[in-house]
Image (cartoon, rainbow, N blue to C red; front, top):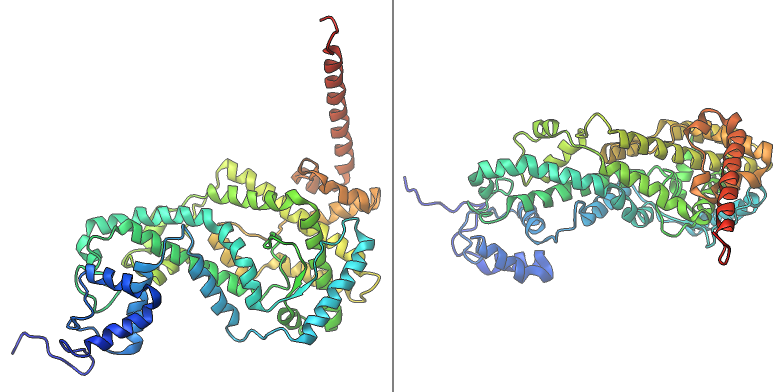
Length: 476
């Protein structure tokens, strides 16, 4: 029996259709084709030779070439591949349908948000955020919020990338032949990746895997959220009130309250968030800074990661994504992380509690089902959802305001004893923000603030005396 390879119906024979084969590659790679083809030839794969036994099935070839294209031509984008995250998020957002916002929905949403501003004017001294309210499809929500999600998870992604290099990089060093043959791409010649830095490739694969996870989480969220502020974090650089009509209507279907009431209540919450993030300029940086500080302190359980990566090829993006989804964070937080987490949970609870108090005061005179809607939203926020659990895996923390009930009680007490204006003035400076002690004992908040003001007054008086004694021309 001859040892020479035989041409089968699924193979491209030596010299056969070489020009068509190369033309197909050029069409699939687009404008970058010349550079990519040169890189392929440099790696030992010449499309013109066409005698490598590659299958002629178009779908399989698209998969193979897509893998090659991503690995060799995608520019490095840091710890998170934003392009992959965006593409996956869009795919998840439209899965099962992403209806375009109709003119009627846009009109109804705009009206609800305009009315919400009028009702809020009575409940808070903070003025409207400015800008016209918007009605978004799920895809539009993804487009607007993806930069924020990518930024939020970047510190953790960097730590995971280092861990992947530590685990898989050693495997590549110990088994260079297996790495060079690139088994994840069937049909490519032996040694296709010879000369490629394995650690650089692993970082690319890890970046893509993390991008897939972010995209999955953001895409799922796009089918759950009512607006741009549901998770408590400021996801938009421009704080305008937004509603996603498809999600609002889906939520209203399971309630006794009419759709119009549900829409108005959710518009109140969204507009209240927008006012807060607009007119408390330090709040956005405060919240995102705490998330960043916590994420940078996260440790990766290398033993757990290594056990999940057993038998996974270094180029298997989906396999690495599944391994990362299993949870690879260290169990114990450092003392610094515990302190940061406490501040973050308190801040998220204070945001949620203030919005709840303001929304309730604005809604009660106008919406018969305001109390029932408030309880429904509270239960929903307390329980979380699949997307929030996804981000708990991604960032190592949950974005739910655990102490929202205590924060609601605190804001309500401040408003009742000192008035809504005093409640809103608490946001005037981060040093005035209530802490965990205040959430534990809302009744004692006023006394503690009075004591703090008295101490500051004593310090100011002492400083004034020191500077008065040091006036120019005065004998010392």
